[in-house]
Amino acid sequence: MTGQSLSLEELPVVWRSAILPRQYRPRGPLVEVHLVPAAPGTHHATPDLERTRGELAESGFVGEQPVHAGSSEDGAWAFSTAGESGLAVLSSGQRTCWFPLPEESFDREALALRVAARLTALLAIDLPLPDALAPAIGLDPVAATTTVATRSVRSPGRIRMGTVAAFPADELRRTAREIAEDLVARLAAPLS
Image (tube, rainbow, N blue to C red; front, side):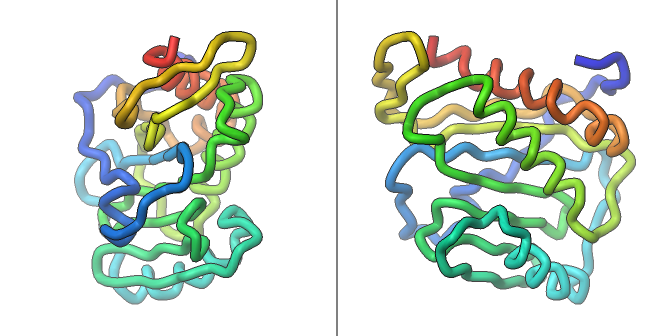
């Protein structure tokens, strides 16, 4: 990773399962990507979140299915009606997205490209950015995930790799691919 990262204690992450309705059960493994403000003080007001829900719904990252968009004092969100992909911005400033693991295979290079695109999309959301953001990544559920050129791995539950470094927004934009490769490598480690 770059020399511009800021060290930090692990920050609390609001994971996808806390954002989607409780009755939602994914059909397959979903990758979650989060950008968490590295310092307190970020807060998005309800009118800003209401305005943002339309932007999230029109982002193109939610997929081909019909979109459910909404907002509250806690955040704004847009996700496919099947729940398999979506975007959210929380009032705390956290930016989140999730999408299906491609064909239930763990191709690190292909996944890093998708994660880098999602990092860029999260940074482009039209709300003020904090001075620094800390990326986190997860995979949920992990029932039967295959890794390219290896064997099938059975691992019940989920993988959640919290924050370990924070980056200024400009650094995140400039090095999204490198940061994505690191996130994917951290996510792959428990599957080895």
